[in-house]
Image (tube, rainbow, N blue to C red; front, side, top):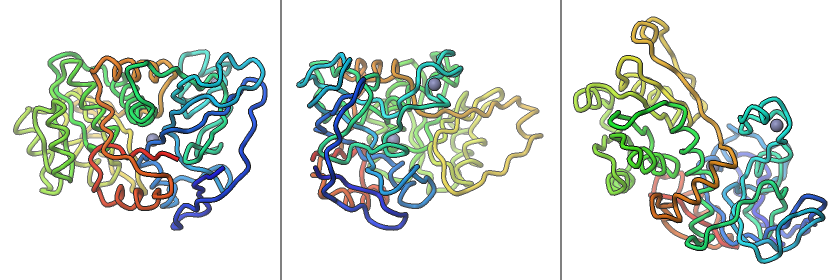
Length: 335
Ligand SMILES: [Zn+2]
Ligand SMILES: [Zn+2]
């Protein structure tokens, strides 16, 4: 089968012919129909994230059709499935506590520790599969597996109520999903971004206000228009975005870190303690959140914001355009 493999940072992915994996007990082989391209891919290419081994097939937003099943699989060939990219053990102390997204003994982790979905096939544990509702195509389901699920998990951390104001700082795939989820929960959303096309899309999906981050006075503008936000979802993770994001908050507000970069952020305990600012983080998602994301999309609440589809062979072109900020929404690859 073909697979787009990461060998080293600062090198394009290589489209290679590799052995098709075979499923063993409790596993299935999924024929990939769609794989979303996420900003995390760029973190691997930049050397910010390092896979457990190389070469590794990237791609962690995967939907397709069950092609082959191992023993005790519980799925049949032909079933349409979305894949949870992180495969928790479901028995460690965190899994037992409902925090499977920070499992300490994961069975697998697409692109990070096991081969991902930029390929004709991917092998995963059955526990990673969720059936795709009839109303959704695999093309629509794939990007939900990281963008919408990450957004759902993060939205729950902040403790927002209807009528509150939240800033979504960064409007890539996760940010656009967050805008929709928060608006659906009755939260007023301020979307912050650098690309006019992405900001227009955020507005289309219900953001009340958009702020162009390139103007440099984001915190001031958010304070002026809202009086301070109850939460800021930080999807950029640079020194500059961190400073501006903190400045957007109301007293008692929550800064929720989701994005990261090579930058470090300077924090003043005094400036945070006096208004009792909460600094939180959010990573990945639970299986229940993937089920919820698929249901929300199937019922029309959540648009997967698929911007384009492209053949797997064009993966490096797509990554270049993603880096330039040219893609409003998600690109989806098909083998
Ligand atoms: Zn992702
Ligand atoms: Zn676990």
